[in-house]
Amino acid sequence: MEIKVHSLGGEAGTLQLSDEVFGREFNEALVHQVVTAYMARGRQATKSWKGRSDVRGGGAKPWRQKGTGRARAGSIRSPLWRTGGKALPHPRVNYEQKINKKMWRSGIRSILSELVRQERLVLVDGLPLDAPKTKALVGKLTELGLPLDALIVVEAFDDKLALAARNLPHVHVTDADHVDPVSLIDFEKVVMTQGAVKRLEERLA
Image (cartoon, rainbow, N blue to C red):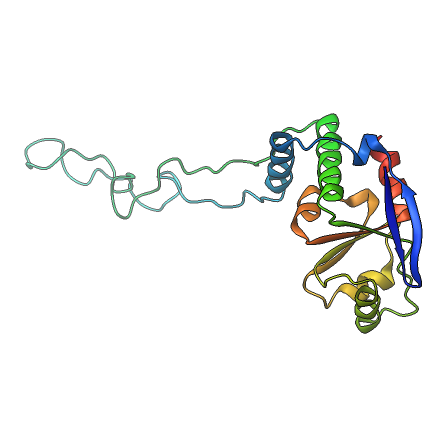
């Protein structure tokens, strides 16, 4: 398929996209699994609480077994007590979900294809900046008719571009090797350079 390539000087022409990467059917179940797995990897699993063996006290039996009229108790640190330890104290070690490389690549291809169908993917011949100035980046995006809610994907990480976008809360810059499914879905527009397209086609073919 062919898609328009925008340029700061006007329309730069068209670019032939790989149907294998940008022409797939949308697999909602697979995309959901890939997104869930990606977000699960970001969870730290650091939450913890003390069990009955971790809290202080509870060495002595609070009262004798029989004759008091009260329920039997062996420790004041039982989870049944207000000052006791918590039941099931140990959290999960991690929340990672297994996603193999084939599923991951297929999920990314499905998302990219849906971006093309929804006309949310915008190709540009480049976004060169002479200096890392936010105002300069805003001017270029405005000239291209793009909103300030965009993911910018470049072939190789550009320090000037990243610094210029740092003060824009809804603009993020990444390179083609670090594209993730959550970012592709989250932004209103995905701005991609021609070099980034070729790099993604190499990685996902």
